[in-house]
Image 1: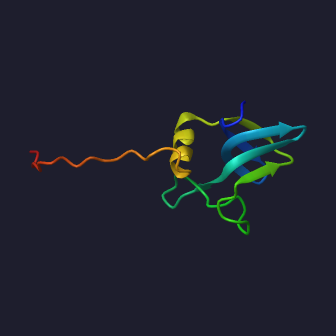
Image 2: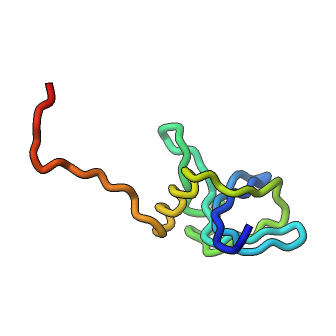
Image 3: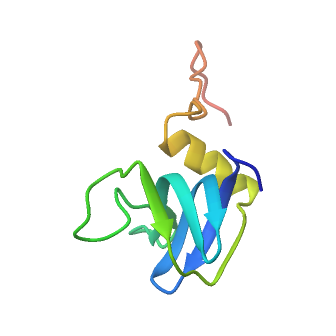
Length: 102
């Protein structure tokens, strides 16, 4: 892993996605961390913070103990980049001419 890679950290408290910053002994630091949560439709989403009583949109988080870390899959990495404003969300284009398809 290199600095800036989008990675997933699995900890006892849950699963987190962020940009890899550094790793030392048993700790790892992420920049722009997002906690993975389940959305009302049963899908995946990102929380505004990493703890219920913590600040919203923290700049960094250091995990002193974690289960494992891995590169995030492409779909999660894309969603993370959209959520952090690093990438534009795909736009739906409406055709200029409206037609009824039969």
